[in-house]
Length: 122
Image 1 (cartoon, rainbow, N blue to C red):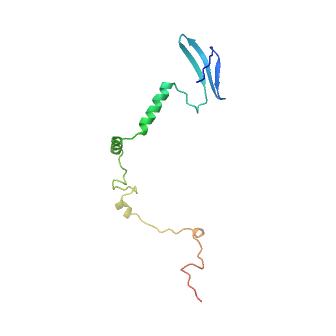
Image 2: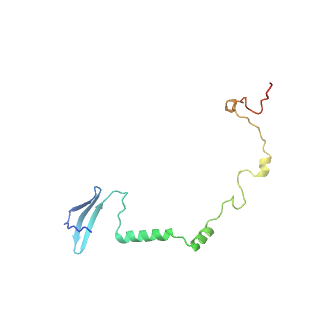
Image 3: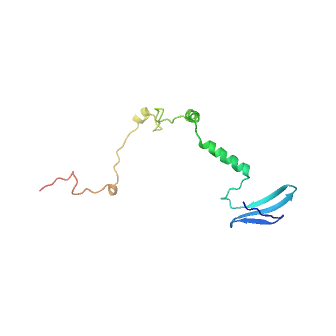
């Protein structure tokens, strides 16, 4: 561990991006100012330890957690056997007229000589 002595309004640099300034000294308390990029998390040690502990606990799933999760999440309509593919009921859909629409000619691929629908006349 590196131990440095600093007075009020003096600064310590960590690398090129982290700057620690002594803001105030009152009795046995020292107030620090920390200037660091936002991508670097800065926490008091006890807060850091609490975050680490919570993340470790959250990563562990017990069998009771899975059972509780399974009861909380309800299956969707497809899993319940109810399919809602159309907004129109099936009886109303049978009464609707249907039309056959063929694709535009420029979208239909031309037939080739190797096609099975062309008969060989030789």
